[in-house]
Length: 172
Image (cartoon, rainbow, N blue to C red; front, side):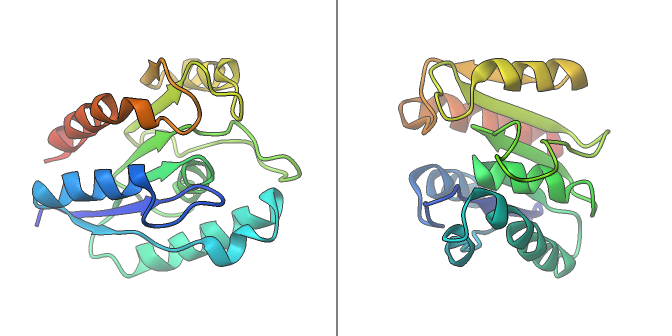
């Protein structure tokens, strides 16, 4: 096994979501162990109140890992993955359609300096405006792949999978 990857779905989604499932299958085919936690029990609490329970659940999962995992997240899953990197060691972050902030939650998007991170975002994302994500990536000098897609990024799965392969290849 190459390592452990935890893939976090977005709000009002599930562990079987299209992106999460596709990326998990891709990683497993390359010898990675994957885990897709279910955060749906927290999602009914609203945006702001869903963040802390997601971060806590991720921390518990990471505590059971032998080595720091790669965290992959979409939307709210990306936001929580980034925040947990501030609290516990992670090998890398692959963040999709990441909100720069969650309305009502005190902390804006942040991640541990020095953790390899890749952001992927849609030019036509109306849920998480691209300008704020560009500003965050620029302030941290993080790679940002912008695609002609919306928040769900479903039309860009081939490009996302190819970039995911690059990230995993760099970690192998």
